[in-house]
Length: 113
Length: 272
Ligand SMILES: Nc1ncnc2c1ncn2[C@@H]1O[C@H](COP(=O)(O)OP(=O)(O)OP(=O)(O)O)[C@@H](O)[C@H]1O
Ligand SMILES: [Mg+2]
Image (cartoon, rainbow over all chains, first blue to last red; front, side):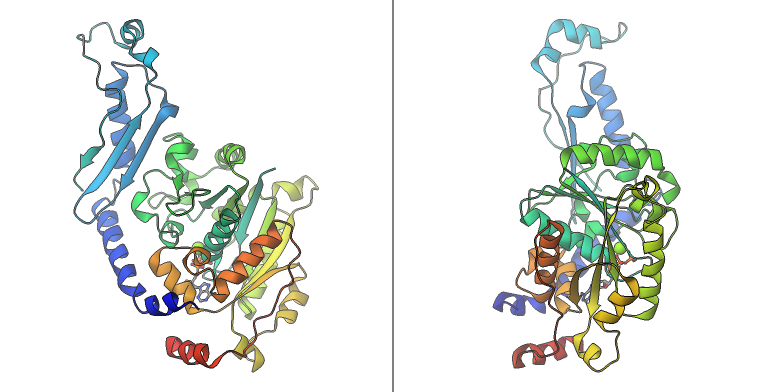
């Protein structure tokens, strides 16, 4: 065993406790609706898709559950062609009012647990 | 050529998840592209052992059911970029998995990874049979103890009959990984000897991992033991097993009860 391994051996249990506390707090709070991230992603994308054609394969979703705050990051890659007026018109349903294109790379969205 | 490897045992708690994470990390440390897939739907734990529990958004069930794309569900390890995790669902039950759906996901994983390691749930039911279904290689995790050996024998029988390879008359490589081996107890005749287990199960030995406090420390910290403390005896055993999986010839050393004074003192203290 390394020196470091020896000195850190006694300290792993508190780390385990902290990790579990955070995880279980989230799991209990979400029980019955753990697909929240999936629902959020679907609805957010549906809104964006009303205005810009997006490729579902180019969407990355990242989550980091924290003690106080969790972050949900949705990263949508939009080819410049998708932002061209013709493509936008095609994506927009006829009855929808003209919308300004959102910024190409949405900032990470913060979501309170 | 990608390889699908199931880590299975029949009996619960013998070290499948520990071994999946440790072997996966060891292969990734050797430069292989590895994904570890948790098949324990409803009781996922691989995310905790690998320290990715805070980052799970989508899981295997979401991908199988088309609610998420594969890249969205894969979690890249923060320490090793060649290592990824595909978590199991915590809320659904195993009926959410279908053979056809798993087959599709495995095909997609084969395009991206060299090794697809399937951490099987305990038992011989659907979860376990799906985890082994597409395997090219099987690691049978066994403790030197009667019920574990018996269950392993049962699982070996299933590997020989219920996998796609077996049904197609193709060879499926099977390896025995002996874990939680206690050399002192084996020397005192309180635990089955390595040779006894090998003779009974009659499949080649991949490695022997001794019972060790380093495994608990690593899982407390959320790090595969081969990453957390590469010099520790269990990490060495797993790293050597990974080299054997890659085709290297490395002799298996049976852990011996003779240990230095220091480790004897501390080993005893940790066990108390
Ligand atoms: N070599 C070892 N030395 C000490 N403890 C170990 C060793 N291998 C595994 N363990 C411990 O044994 C317990 C069970 O291990 P693990 O979760 O890997 O088993 P499993 O086969 O995946 O269980 P399950 O059947 O429930 O999925 C864990 O607490 C783990 O830390
Ligand atoms: Mg397990």
